[in-house]
Length: 126
Picture 1 (cartoon, rainbow, N blue to C red):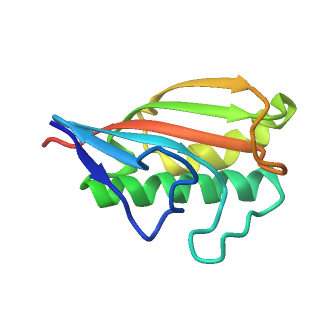
Picture 2: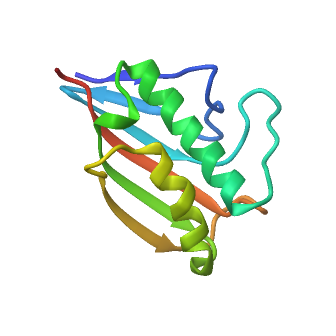
């Protein structure tokens, strides 16, 4: 069984996907970008984009009944791997130790100016 997770605190989907999906004791968060859910604006710097993206992930997790502390797996997509260290400085502020497992890729993203996209898997159960 699956339950969709949608919240006004994260951007609405820009295509045929669900922002979050709960199945069993886990929530799967679709790739989130750096768009403010209220203004639809995107910050410019990688640090600001990382923070905004993680705030969107956090909002979906909270709507699903869990938190960043329960994230077990993250995928980070960066358009410029030379920005990894600057992204990482912001990223580490969002997760307690032990940090979730993570994979980071250098990619081309579909939206002009978008430098980062992040998806996550988190545990919901007690």
